Amino acid sequence: MDRFLTIDSTKGGNGDIWMRLVGFYAVADLLPGFRLRICIPSYFRTLAEFAFGDKLTIVTDSSFKVDLEYTNLGIRHLYKDLLKGKRFISPYQRAVIQDKKKKELKDYVNTWIFNAADRLGVVQIPAAKWISGYQGYLDIIGIKKLRHISYENFTIQVEKQHVRLIEKFRQPVPASVELNIPGDLNEYTVVFPNGTGRQFVPLWWAKKHMPDAYYAFFANDSYADTFKNAGLKIIRFYRSEDIIRLAQEARWTVSTDSFPSHLLQTATNKCTILITGTLKGRIVSPAFKGKVVDADATCHPCLHLARDLHPLCAAGHSECINWHLHAYTSNILKSVCELADHS
Image (cartoon, rainbow, N blue to C red):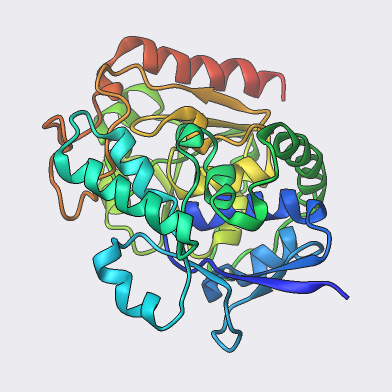
Protein backbone atom coordinates (compact mmCIF):
# COMPACT_ATOMS: atom_id res chain seq x y z
CA MET A 1 0.00 0.00 0.00
CA ASP A 2 1.27 3.48 -0.90
CA ARG A 3 1.90 5.81 2.02
CA PHE A 4 1.35 9.54 2.02
CA LEU A 5 4.10 12.12 1.85
CA THR A 6 2.34 15.10 3.42
CA ILE A 7 3.64 18.58 2.60
CA ASP A 8 2.44 21.84 4.17
CA SER A 9 2.54 24.28 1.25
CA THR A 10 0.52 27.09 2.80
CA LYS A 11 3.51 29.43 3.20
CA GLY A 12 4.71 31.71 0.41
CA GLY A 13 3.13 33.87 -2.25
CA ASN A 14 0.20 32.60 -4.30
CA GLY A 15 2.43 32.16 -7.32
CA ASP A 16 4.92 30.11 -5.27
CA ILE A 17 2.14 27.83 -4.04
CA TRP A 18 0.79 27.33 -7.55
CA MET A 19 4.19 26.54 -9.07
CA ARG A 20 4.75 23.91 -6.36
CA LEU A 21 1.45 22.29 -7.32
CA VAL A 22 2.57 22.22 -10.95
CA GLY A 23 5.82 20.60 -9.82
CA PHE A 24 4.21 18.02 -7.55
CA TYR A 25 1.64 17.19 -10.24
CA ALA A 26 4.41 16.56 -12.74
CA VAL A 27 6.37 14.16 -10.52
CA ALA A 28 3.43 12.34 -8.90
CA ASP A 29 3.90 9.37 -11.25
CA LEU A 30 7.63 9.20 -10.51
CA LEU A 31 7.22 8.35 -6.82
CA PRO A 32 6.50 4.64 -6.48
CA GLY A 33 5.35 3.81 -2.97
CA PHE A 34 4.18 7.33 -2.16
CA ARG A 35 1.08 9.45 -2.64
CA LEU A 36 1.48 13.20 -2.40
CA ARG A 37 -0.84 15.00 0.02
CA ILE A 38 -0.44 18.77 -0.31
CA CYS A 39 -1.91 21.23 2.19
CA ILE A 40 -2.77 24.60 0.61
CA PRO A 41 -4.79 27.71 1.58
CA SER A 42 -8.55 27.11 1.48
CA TYR A 43 -9.19 29.74 -1.21
CA PHE A 44 -7.19 27.60 -3.66
CA ARG A 45 -8.96 24.34 -3.01
CA THR A 46 -11.66 24.31 -5.71
CA LEU A 47 -9.31 25.29 -8.52
CA ALA A 48 -6.45 23.10 -7.29
CA GLU A 49 -8.69 20.03 -7.06
CA PHE A 50 -10.04 20.72 -10.54
CA ALA A 51 -6.56 20.99 -12.03
CA PHE A 52 -4.49 18.55 -9.98
CA GLY A 53 -6.92 16.39 -8.00
CA ASP A 54 -6.55 13.35 -10.24
CA LYS A 55 -2.94 12.87 -9.10
CA LEU A 56 -2.58 14.88 -5.87
CA THR A 57 -4.54 14.72 -2.64
CA ILE A 58 -5.43 18.34 -1.86
CA VAL A 59 -6.20 19.29 1.75
CA THR A 60 -6.78 22.62 3.46
CA ASP A 61 -6.92 21.75 7.14
CA SER A 62 -4.22 21.10 9.72
CA SER A 63 -5.53 17.78 11.04
CA PHE A 64 -2.85 15.82 9.19
CA LYS A 65 0.63 15.28 10.57
CA VAL A 66 2.93 16.84 8.00
CA ASP A 67 6.30 15.43 6.99
CA LEU A 68 7.68 18.75 5.77
CA GLU A 69 6.63 22.39 5.85
CA TYR A 70 7.69 25.21 3.52
CA THR A 71 9.26 28.20 5.23
CA ASN A 72 10.98 31.48 4.41
CA LEU A 73 12.35 31.96 7.93
CA GLY A 74 15.95 31.81 9.07
CA ILE A 75 17.32 29.14 11.39
CA ARG A 76 17.12 31.39 14.46
CA HIS A 77 13.35 31.63 13.93
CA LEU A 78 12.98 27.89 13.37
CA TYR A 79 15.08 26.33 16.11
CA LYS A 80 12.24 25.97 18.64
CA ASP A 81 10.13 24.08 16.09
CA LEU A 82 13.16 22.04 15.06
CA LEU A 83 13.65 20.97 18.67
CA LYS A 84 10.01 19.83 18.66
CA GLY A 85 10.75 17.56 15.70
CA LYS A 86 9.35 19.66 12.87
CA ARG A 87 11.10 19.49 9.51
CA PHE A 88 11.15 22.20 6.86
CA ILE A 89 11.81 22.97 3.20
CA SER A 90 13.49 26.31 2.49
CA PRO A 91 13.84 27.03 -1.25
CA TYR A 92 14.02 30.81 -0.81
CA GLN A 93 17.24 31.29 1.11
CA ARG A 94 19.53 30.44 -1.79
CA ALA A 95 17.45 32.41 -4.32
CA VAL A 96 17.50 35.63 -2.29
CA ILE A 97 21.27 35.49 -1.85
CA GLN A 98 21.79 34.58 -5.52
CA ASP A 99 19.81 37.64 -6.68
CA LYS A 100 21.69 40.10 -4.48
CA LYS A 101 23.97 42.38 -6.46
CA LYS A 102 26.42 42.55 -3.56
CA LYS A 103 26.97 39.68 -1.12
CA GLU A 104 27.64 40.33 2.57
CA LEU A 105 29.44 38.24 5.18
CA LYS A 106 26.13 37.21 6.72
CA ASP A 107 25.07 35.73 3.37
CA TYR A 108 28.03 33.35 3.36
CA VAL A 109 27.41 32.47 7.03
CA ASN A 110 23.73 31.76 6.33
CA THR A 111 24.65 29.60 3.34
CA TRP A 112 26.99 27.52 5.51
CA ILE A 113 24.32 27.13 8.23
CA PHE A 114 21.64 26.04 5.76
CA ASN A 115 24.03 23.59 4.09
CA ALA A 116 24.67 22.02 7.50
CA ALA A 117 20.91 21.91 8.25
CA ASP A 118 20.31 20.21 4.91
CA ARG A 119 22.94 17.55 5.60
CA LEU A 120 21.17 16.84 8.89
CA GLY A 121 17.83 16.72 7.08
CA VAL A 122 16.15 19.23 9.38
CA VAL A 123 15.84 22.08 6.85
CA GLN A 124 16.00 20.72 3.33
CA ILE A 125 17.19 23.01 0.52
CA PRO A 126 17.72 22.62 -3.23
CA ALA A 127 21.18 22.31 -4.71
CA ALA A 128 22.73 25.63 -5.73
CA LYS A 129 22.97 24.62 -9.40
CA TRP A 130 19.17 24.79 -9.75
CA ILE A 131 18.80 28.28 -8.27
CA SER A 132 18.12 29.97 -11.61
CA GLY A 133 15.85 27.21 -12.89
CA TYR A 134 12.07 26.88 -12.89
CA GLN A 135 10.74 27.37 -9.38
CA GLY A 136 8.27 24.53 -9.79
CA TYR A 137 11.33 22.25 -9.87
CA LEU A 138 13.46 24.24 -7.44
CA ASP A 139 10.82 24.12 -4.72
CA ILE A 140 10.41 20.35 -4.81
CA ILE A 141 13.97 19.21 -5.59
CA GLY A 142 15.03 20.38 -2.15
CA ILE A 143 13.01 17.48 -0.70
CA LYS A 144 15.39 14.57 -0.18
CA LYS A 145 12.86 11.97 -1.34
CA LEU A 146 12.55 13.81 -4.68
CA ARG A 147 16.20 14.55 -5.41
CA HIS A 148 16.59 11.53 -7.64
CA ILE A 149 14.31 13.21 -10.22
CA SER A 150 16.44 14.86 -12.89
CA TYR A 151 15.46 18.13 -14.51
CA GLU A 152 15.23 16.33 -17.84
CA ASN A 153 12.70 13.83 -16.50
CA PHE A 154 10.87 16.61 -14.68
CA THR A 155 10.58 18.60 -17.92
CA ILE A 156 9.26 15.57 -19.79
CA GLN A 157 6.57 15.12 -17.16
CA VAL A 158 5.67 18.83 -17.13
CA GLU A 159 5.24 18.76 -20.92
CA LYS A 160 3.08 15.66 -20.70
CA GLN A 161 0.89 17.02 -17.92
CA HIS A 162 0.61 20.45 -19.58
CA VAL A 163 -1.27 18.87 -22.47
CA ARG A 164 -3.59 17.26 -19.94
CA LEU A 165 -4.15 20.54 -18.08
CA ILE A 166 -4.82 22.57 -21.23
CA GLU A 167 -7.42 19.98 -22.22
CA LYS A 168 -9.09 20.26 -18.80
CA PHE A 169 -9.30 24.02 -19.12
CA ARG A 170 -11.04 23.88 -22.47
CA GLN A 171 -14.28 23.71 -20.54
CA PRO A 172 -15.42 27.01 -18.95
CA VAL A 173 -14.30 27.38 -15.35
CA PRO A 174 -17.20 28.31 -13.04
CA ALA A 175 -16.74 32.00 -12.20
CA SER A 176 -17.85 33.83 -9.08
CA VAL A 177 -21.39 35.16 -9.29
CA GLU A 178 -20.11 38.73 -8.90
CA LEU A 179 -17.85 38.56 -11.97
CA ASN A 180 -19.12 40.72 -14.83
CA ILE A 181 -17.76 39.39 -18.13
CA PRO A 182 -18.11 42.02 -20.89
CA GLY A 183 -20.06 40.75 -23.87
CA ASP A 184 -17.39 41.88 -26.31
CA LEU A 185 -14.41 40.46 -24.39
CA ASN A 186 -13.74 37.96 -27.18
CA GLU A 187 -12.78 40.90 -29.40
CA TYR A 188 -10.26 42.39 -26.98
CA THR A 189 -7.12 41.71 -25.00
CA VAL A 190 -7.49 41.45 -21.24
CA VAL A 191 -4.49 42.65 -19.22
CA PHE A 192 -3.68 41.63 -15.63
CA PRO A 193 -1.54 44.69 -14.85
CA ASN A 194 -0.75 44.50 -11.18
CA GLY A 195 1.66 42.87 -8.75
CA THR A 196 2.82 43.33 -5.19
CA GLY A 197 6.29 44.40 -6.36
CA ARG A 198 7.47 46.79 -9.07
CA GLN A 199 6.02 44.87 -12.02
CA PHE A 200 2.70 46.77 -12.22
CA VAL A 201 1.76 48.41 -15.55
CA PRO A 202 1.98 52.20 -15.11
CA LEU A 203 -1.19 54.12 -15.95
CA TRP A 204 0.62 56.35 -18.46
CA TRP A 205 1.90 53.27 -20.33
CA ALA A 206 -1.56 51.68 -20.48
CA LYS A 207 -3.16 54.86 -21.84
CA LYS A 208 -0.43 55.39 -24.43
CA HIS A 209 0.14 51.86 -25.72
CA MET A 210 -2.95 49.72 -24.98
CA PRO A 211 -5.88 52.12 -24.47
CA ASP A 212 -8.47 49.72 -25.90
CA ALA A 213 -7.66 46.71 -23.71
CA TYR A 214 -9.63 45.57 -20.69
CA TYR A 215 -7.65 45.78 -17.41
CA ALA A 216 -8.52 43.15 -14.79
CA PHE A 217 -8.01 43.82 -11.08
CA PHE A 218 -8.79 41.96 -7.90
CA ALA A 219 -12.01 43.43 -6.51
CA ASN A 220 -10.37 45.23 -3.57
CA ASP A 221 -7.45 46.65 -5.55
CA SER A 222 -7.53 50.46 -5.29
CA TYR A 223 -5.31 50.72 -8.38
CA ALA A 224 -8.40 49.78 -10.41
CA ASP A 225 -10.06 53.10 -9.61
CA THR A 226 -7.03 54.96 -10.96
CA PHE A 227 -7.45 53.19 -14.31
CA LYS A 228 -11.22 53.60 -14.34
CA ASN A 229 -11.03 57.32 -13.58
CA ALA A 230 -8.57 57.71 -16.46
CA GLY A 231 -11.17 56.33 -18.89
CA LEU A 232 -9.77 52.82 -19.29
CA LYS A 233 -12.01 49.75 -19.27
CA ILE A 234 -11.65 47.65 -16.12
CA ILE A 235 -12.95 44.32 -14.88
CA ARG A 236 -12.98 43.38 -11.20
CA PHE A 237 -12.44 39.71 -10.36
CA TYR A 238 -13.04 37.95 -7.03
CA ARG A 239 -11.49 34.48 -7.08
CA SER A 240 -8.67 32.61 -8.76
CA GLU A 241 -11.17 30.90 -11.03
CA ASP A 242 -12.20 34.30 -12.40
CA ILE A 243 -8.69 34.91 -13.75
CA ILE A 244 -8.86 31.78 -15.86
CA ARG A 245 -12.45 32.39 -16.93
CA LEU A 246 -11.56 35.87 -18.23
CA ALA A 247 -8.66 34.39 -20.18
CA GLN A 248 -10.98 31.77 -21.65
CA GLU A 249 -13.33 34.49 -22.90
CA ALA A 250 -10.74 37.02 -24.13
CA ARG A 251 -9.19 37.25 -27.59
CA TRP A 252 -5.73 37.37 -25.97
CA THR A 253 -4.35 37.78 -22.47
CA VAL A 254 -1.39 39.73 -21.09
CA SER A 255 -0.06 39.41 -17.54
CA THR A 256 2.81 40.87 -15.57
CA ASP A 257 5.06 38.35 -13.80
CA SER A 258 2.67 38.18 -10.86
CA PHE A 259 0.23 35.59 -9.54
CA PRO A 260 -2.21 35.56 -12.53
CA SER A 261 0.66 34.64 -14.86
CA HIS A 262 1.11 31.29 -13.12
CA LEU A 263 -2.55 30.34 -13.44
CA LEU A 264 -2.56 31.44 -17.07
CA GLN A 265 0.51 29.33 -17.91
CA THR A 266 -1.40 26.30 -16.65
CA ALA A 267 -4.71 27.04 -18.35
CA THR A 268 -4.02 28.66 -21.73
CA ASN A 269 -1.42 29.28 -24.41
CA LYS A 270 -3.23 32.43 -25.64
CA CYS A 271 -1.18 34.63 -23.36
CA THR A 272 1.82 36.96 -23.16
CA ILE A 273 3.82 36.93 -19.91
CA LEU A 274 5.80 40.11 -19.16
CA ILE A 275 9.05 39.67 -17.24
CA THR A 276 10.16 42.64 -15.15
CA GLY A 277 12.21 41.83 -12.05
CA THR A 278 12.30 38.05 -11.86
CA LEU A 279 14.40 35.66 -13.91
CA LYS A 280 12.45 34.35 -16.89
CA GLY A 281 13.64 30.78 -16.40
CA ARG A 282 12.59 30.78 -12.77
CA ILE A 283 8.92 31.62 -13.21
CA VAL A 284 7.99 30.48 -16.72
CA SER A 285 7.02 26.84 -17.04
CA PRO A 286 9.15 24.86 -19.53
CA ALA A 287 5.87 23.66 -21.06
CA PHE A 288 4.30 27.09 -21.66
CA LYS A 289 3.55 27.62 -25.37
CA GLY A 290 2.46 31.26 -25.26
CA LYS A 291 4.64 34.34 -25.62
CA VAL A 292 7.16 35.65 -23.09
CA VAL A 293 8.57 39.18 -23.24
CA ASP A 294 11.82 39.21 -21.28
CA ALA A 295 13.09 42.15 -19.25
CA ASP A 296 15.40 44.57 -21.04
CA ALA A 297 16.57 46.60 -18.03
CA THR A 298 20.23 46.49 -17.00
CA CYS A 299 19.26 46.10 -13.33
CA HIS A 300 17.34 42.88 -14.04
CA PRO A 301 16.94 40.62 -12.09
CA CYS A 302 16.13 42.46 -8.88
CA LEU A 303 15.02 41.56 -5.39
CA HIS A 304 11.28 41.51 -4.84
CA LEU A 305 10.31 44.40 -2.56
CA ALA A 306 6.64 44.82 -1.69
CA ARG A 307 5.36 48.20 -2.90
CA ASP A 308 3.31 48.78 0.24
CA LEU A 309 6.49 48.54 2.33
CA HIS A 310 9.12 49.88 -0.09
CA PRO A 311 8.09 52.82 -2.29
CA LEU A 312 11.31 52.43 -4.31
CA CYS A 313 13.00 49.35 -5.76
CA ALA A 314 16.61 48.46 -4.94
CA ALA A 315 17.76 50.60 -7.88
CA GLY A 316 15.77 53.58 -6.59
CA HIS A 317 12.81 53.56 -9.00
CA SER A 318 9.10 53.83 -8.14
CA GLU A 319 8.14 51.80 -11.23
CA CYS A 320 10.10 49.26 -13.23
CA ILE A 321 12.26 50.98 -15.84
CA ASN A 322 11.39 48.29 -18.38
CA TRP A 323 8.24 50.30 -19.10
CA HIS A 324 10.40 53.17 -20.34
CA LEU A 325 12.39 51.03 -22.80
CA HIS A 326 11.33 51.05 -26.45
CA ALA A 327 12.34 47.45 -27.17
CA TYR A 328 10.32 46.13 -24.23
CA THR A 329 7.15 47.95 -25.29
CA SER A 330 7.66 46.99 -28.93
CA ASN A 331 7.92 43.30 -28.05
CA ILE A 332 4.73 43.44 -25.99
CA LEU A 333 2.69 45.07 -28.75
CA LYS A 334 4.17 42.73 -31.35
CA SER A 335 3.22 39.66 -29.31
CA VAL A 336 -0.38 40.81 -28.97
CA CYS A 337 -0.83 41.82 -32.59
CA GLU A 338 0.87 38.84 -34.21
CA LEU A 339 -0.21 36.03 -31.92
CA ALA A 340 -3.78 37.22 -31.35
CA ASP A 341 -4.30 37.39 -35.12
CA HIS A 342 -3.24 33.75 -35.46
CA SER A 343 -4.89 32.30 -32.35
